[in-house]
Length: 109
Image (cartoon, helix red, strand yellow):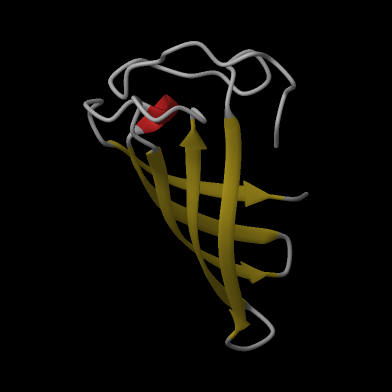
């Protein structure tokens, strides 16, 4: 995705925002889902987003995301969980890796 903005020199350690930063954003994503049976499903996603400043002086920065999800449902109840890791969030090469885990329960009456 090219926002059509003129790229200025952007350090690899500076945060970038899609649609406001100059340069080109490219994404490659792969997902796979498997229904184990009528009640259980598992999915995995791996994505790599690359920011290219279109400048000889600036290095490209990749933001990598990996996610695993599992879901169980029975009647009016469902239990879902996911775990995600994001490396170089906001295309910042020295940013801390973000991780999140969530478990949710849904009940229908």
